[in-house]
Image 1 (cartoon, protein in one colour):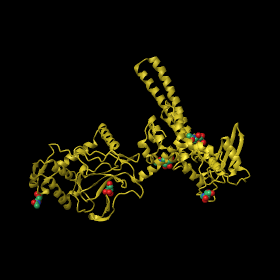
Image 2: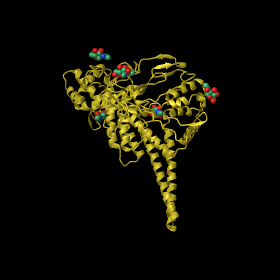
Image 3: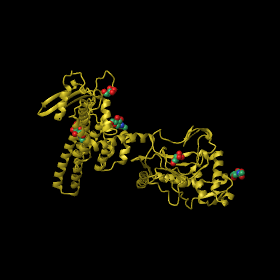
Amino acid sequence: WNQCLGHRVLGTGGRILAWWEEERYPEGIKWKFLEHKGPVFAPPYEPLPENVKFYYDGKVMKLSTKAEEVATFFAKMLDHEYTTKEIFRKNFFKDWRKEMTSEEKSTITNLSKCDFTHMSQYFKAQTEARKQMSKEEKQKIKEENERLLKEYGYCVMDNHKERIANFKIEPPGLFRGRGNHPKMGMLKRRIMPEDIIINCSKDSKIPPPPPGHKWKEVRHDNKVTWLVSWTENIQGSIKYIMLNPSSRIKGEKDWQKYETARRLKKCVDKIRNQYREDWKSKEMKVRQRAVALYFIDKLALRAGNEKEEGETADTVGCCSLRVEHIKLHPELDGQEYVVEFDFLGKDSIRYYNKVPVEKRVFKNLQLFMENKQPEDDLFDRLNTSILNKHLQDLMEGLTAKVFRTYNASITLQQQLKELTNPDDNIPAKILSYNRANRAVAILCNHQRAPPKTFEKSMMNLQSKIDAKKEQLADARRELKSAKADAKVRRDEKSKKTVESKKKAVQRIEEQLMKLEVQATDREENKQIALGTSKLNYLDPRISVAWCKKWGIPIEKIYNKTQREKFAWAIDMAEEDYEF
Ligand SMILES: *[C@@H]1O[C@H](CO)[C@@H](O)[C@H](O)[C@H]1NC(C)=O
Ligand SMILES: *[C@@H]1O[C@H](CO)[C@@H](O)[C@H](O)[C@H]1NC(C)=O
Ligand SMILES: *[C@@H]1O[C@H](CO)[C@@H](O)[C@H](O)[C@H]1NC(C)=O
Ligand SMILES: *[C@@H]1O[C@H](CO)[C@@H](O)[C@H](O)[C@H]1NC(C)=O
Ligand SMILES: CC(=O)N[C@H]1CO[C@H](CO)[C@@H](O)[C@@H]1O
């Protein structure tokens, strides 16, 4: 029975149980830029048609617009128990009289003599008519709502677009309250621009008030969570238009991660030149650091050594590699300077890879391994904190993970460019997307054991394919005989039959193709976990832009949870987004 209104918690009878100062962000979180379109006001009042009558004391009475509007609020609730309650009636009548002209006031002195039934019937008929609306009319309303959402439902906060939770201002009406609220029945006023305080940044486009109106105030406070506020007249509590703070903070972090990776893209060449130079350094520590960095960059290795996995799990990252984890081959399978890696990485996933490296790296590794036992550290002058410190010096916010994010995202972008065939249909394009995604997962070593249900689900799919093939053969036979038939008869009817049989064959061919694509996809996916890279390393704006470019519904790429997580990207990605 407690309700939370603005910044007050109210108990029964509207008693204030608790209140707080202001809707504020947690300490330290502030925005730098905020731009929005302001609120959407309730639509203006539309007077009743002439034939809808109000009766006082048995006689028809034409009400002034203002009085009529408030009367309709009561008429709409006529069937509700509220309108029989004494407090409700008393409060309503008092507030209604304030909206009346002096003539109306002197005539209408007794609520019990007011007859709202005709009005009430009119509204019921309207509700009924709305239910019977045609598809086109419903579509029109839907489109209008979407237009409003697009225009007013978002704001720009610090460079990214954010969804606004409640951009529509509640229409006027009668206050209901809960229980026997002493204020029930009072008129909840129409909120006007003159009631509205706008909070936005100084350098933003300040939303213009509706023509002929003024805002109460425009503020620029970057510590508050609201965009628009006003004081409602019943309880005197402050109402806000806000964003969803939790999603903002999450989306913000996610967004920052990819922006950091994009910053790396700009300076990665410089970093690479630098570590190449460092391979020649006189200082052993610098050489080791440079080779480790090369591994992180080239192999997307983790920095490692964080000791979070506990003492028993013998998992390693780049800095904690031991001599036993690598083998050097001056020549292997026709390639020069090959390093063979074999170790347990994060979550005890085996990392096994044979990579040709540059000659200088190879020579350095030989040097690092000299006179060492298999269990000795490969990079004995290095640990994770030294490496991380160095990364910070190279670029603010740089960690080994940023290299992974950068490489994963840029690889996805390149793979999508390479693999997407413009002439493909949608299922084939999605297969290409999944293949690009798999290329990234392999790069990040996101492997998995084939799921237990794999064989069974593959068999199910195969039997579906077989059935579809049979169906196709039947359809083709039918088409053939229909054609033969048409040749003999040469009439309109048999021509039509041929056409419809042709269509059937085409339809079945498409269905078969879809199933076959699905089977290929599943087979290729057998030992790869796509989820991790999709959720953690791939800039969602790349996928969204790809979908927009090729007209692929976003649902084909992201499921519901993923769409929520990436809402910030789905709302903002341009068709030609470049990571
Ligand atoms: C108001 O009207 C009702 C119904 O006509 C009547 O019973 C009641 O006595 C009236 N009240 C006053 C205060 O005139
Ligand atoms: C990403 O990693 C792969 C595999 O090591 C590497 O071949 C490629 O050059 C990297 N791409 C970029 C753009 O860094
Ligand atoms: C890393 O090495 C530096 C310098 O040798 C040392 O000061 C630091 O304590 C080491 N950190 C860890 C976590 O081992
Ligand atoms: C969406 O996919 C992820 C894996 O990628 C899964 O963990 C999650 O349960 C899925 N959510 C829904 C609503 O299907
Ligand atoms: C509700 C409220 O007053 N919020 C803030 C809006 O901005 C001003 C400064 O511009 C602050 O003083 C307010 O606290």
